[in-house]
Length: 113
Length: 113
Image (cartoon, rainbow over all chains, first blue to last red; front, side, top):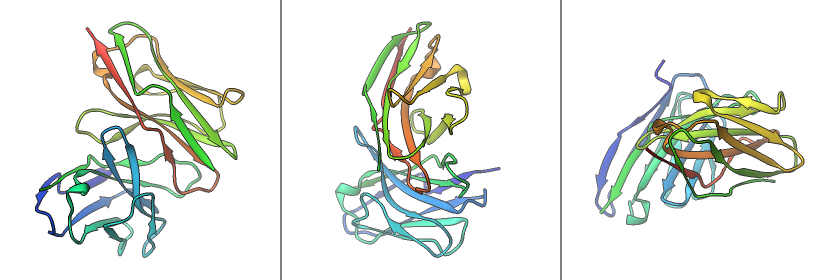
């Protein structure tokens, strides 16, 4: 059971470039989330999804887009990368049963030069 | 509305001594509370959760936490620290039907030999 898998694990981009981060879960979870983690800031929610075909904004959505075309996948896109988006990105998923814990991937380290 | 405050950004202990990581929460409804651990370059792993059953919750690796409604606290403890406990710890609150858990900013546990 792989759980939550994030690809890629590392990436370096130049300012203005675009890229997509992929999150895949094999637990049949309804809810999926994208967070960014920066020193001293904890985890901040970028976007989330409560089911296939749905997405919603989190705390820090600007500069990011997401899609949930399949239940098991949640994609995070950066259309025009900026140095301020240098961060570690985590994907998580959880079931829709009330108050269940989240399951996290190992993260994607993204540097924007 | 819900919020969580981790009272210490860093906690330093010697190996073999007790660990106390403090967490206070605010919630309009009966909360679910979680502690996660994050080791370097890894994702978050669930340590334990409280969901309105026993107020003293036992987790993995010898950790436990006590839910105190009167004090709105959910402090994490361990009788004897091990070097492998050195990590970042996050307290998380989730309320009612909310899809969005709220994270504390994290406490870095440093364990000295």
